[in-house]
Image (cartoon, rainbow, N blue to C red; front, side, top):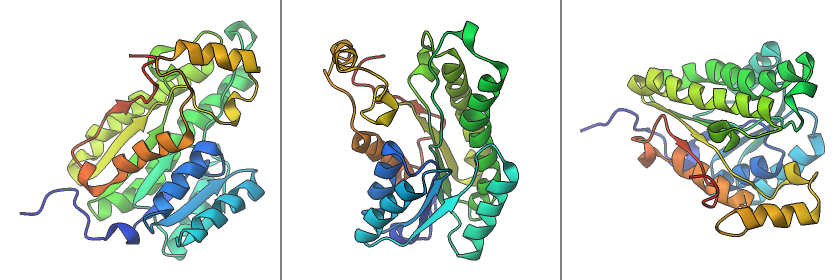
Length: 255
């Protein structure tokens, strides 16, 4: 008996698009999928050299790789990116909405322009990419959309109100779209990491990092590979019964 959401493609013939694929978590995601021979599309906005570096690492693992440039705030650029992928036979079976922007500061100091910028990249970008790429998944009755959120989208964080609000929106978007796409064999989930050892924490002093680690029950920050492994699991064909979930790998920090 066939099951809704089963793919006729072998895993190695699938294509994954990772937005924000040039960063620490994005690069780890790309390499994790490349390790099983998937076709990899690495999106970036400004970090051309970093994207190329990730691409080289993925190609060394035997994957077919493309890099694509687009501003996540600009629908026309995302559409051009989609057209480029289609013309190269790289329409994504799996979309990882990883592109995002952090912000630290008191809400009283946040300007309207800063607020709009954070919402446009973190929330609107996730909406536009999902809307533009999901028709292909629906047409083949199979697909995976995985949104990279944050633990602060679940609990909120002082001095990160705008960022928390944007990621909370991503979580609600995930739950609602999962229900909408479930009859079409497409799952939608979010991974909401806690503190991860990437450049996003580079603004912290060494003693601040130690204090942060002391708050986390496992006593350390997450590695990008630990986040990418969870995302990979959610993308597997056998994960088809998991949808609408916000999963937070945070070392027991927030339960």
